[in-house]
Image 1 (cartoon, rainbow, N blue to C red):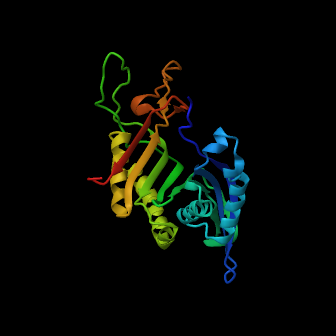
Image 2 (image 1 turned 90 degrees about the horizontal axis):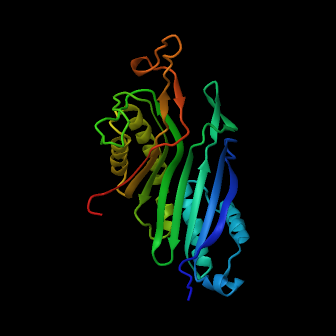
Length: 298
């Protein structure tokens, strides 16, 4: 006899824009987010018995997100995600877990003649600041902060050699190569007691995001990389050291390959090895390297 093993439902791609207005200075700040909500709880009968009396409509989730954005700060996103998730668990007693994901899109203030413009912004990249918060009844709030979509490249300072070379391998050792990746870096915080505890810790979230971004960029640029694996581990170590409230750091880094083009067929034109200048960017297949680093003893 079939039995429902697991179920959850929600609303994805709730797009929210909020303008923060400083009446004294006339300065405005733009915050644009894409929010997703997933609920779990005593909702099985909506699947098995066509009982909609246990269903919080997904449109209600959307409208609630708008209302919470009006009534509460949306920055830092860790606080907003925690407040929103807590609302669903506190308001609907049959809902025992609420998962909220907030993707904050970049709007960077324009600068002219060294002066920041009070209300004009530009989208200067696809990088996003992401947060996933889960409120579980009686178990507090778990929060993962992240950087995603940060595209980086360095034209030298990376190699890959000494790997397994067997009858299936044609890849040759390289001691100098282009290294490029799209950074997905996350750090998981120690569990918070409730949304008020997250709010009380608001200042640490911006500090951690800035530190993680700076560590990622600086380590990527300056490390004489023996492999993506080793470079990302060095990043994790440094981020863990920035704040004792961080339990774990994870990275997912796809290799964005740039292959040399042999042009010797054209009048002996040299474009490989030390003479390589023109490359062919590859869309796939690509390597994908991932790791999670926790504190010892956990």
